Image: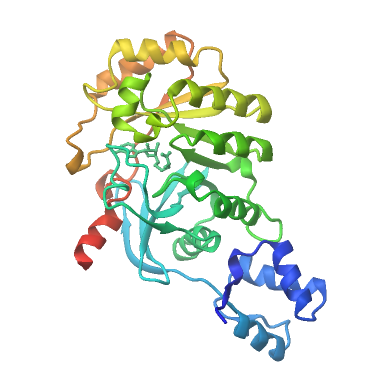
Length: 346
Ligand code: SAH
């Protein structure tokens, strides 16, 4: 019998399993705390549980763990990038960033990505598999342990498309916010999507309080379909309609990511068109000079062009910020650490 990934079970699922093994319900909460609060590596360490039951658990379940394959620390601002090796030898990366309000972690949701955005490094080597809930959680647990920092917010903006791994991501969200575990308020979590419209509608119904971040990167279908293949399935209109619905249901502001690519989406006309489309929506635009990814041939807009784009949006009533660059000296843009490792392995 294949062992079950115990750290991916929600508390109610774990309770069901433990009761089925003939133990009282409160045992599940004890085990859950060992896994998600004290974060042990083995059942033996669960000292308030009988040896016999520890052994029974060990015969049925495994405790996921990650291996730090590489760690880069920025000398400029303390940003840390981890490349983690998973149980099956695959790799994912995550990043720890210090802000004035605390430490934020950016985690991956898949090994590789199938969305095919033309500016993104994560998608170049293709898609391998979804991450399990425990593999998403462990990026947080292992990074917190290794760095000694207390993580106060989580962004799902690493490798992969979280809404393409929907069920596991929902379980992850339940686990990460469980009061018997990390107990993170979902107000401190952002989920970034390239815009899988049906999933945005579904997610809205859960009314989770997280921040939905949508990678828009273009003011119209013509530009967006060129850089983001997902747009050929869902048009900008359909996407923005889903975002408006999300805002209506959750009363939460949607955040739009907009990576500025020189000569592609950064003209004054683009800014005006973008402002017109977002007018009246409870939203925020986050501008990012596109990160250099060798294969794409794209270049970031000049700094003054970025500021001009921002000022124009602001003057048209759109709440707009420019994303701060962190960890510039270790800037393997998102997805590049894993890809280098991948090439190296072959
Ligand atoms: N699949 C999700 C989350 C992962 S990407 C999504 O599409 O939102 C996280 C963010 O980084 C997205 O906004 C993505 O569009 C952006 N991104 C990808 N490559 C980039 C690059 N080279 N420069 C700047 N931002 C990039």
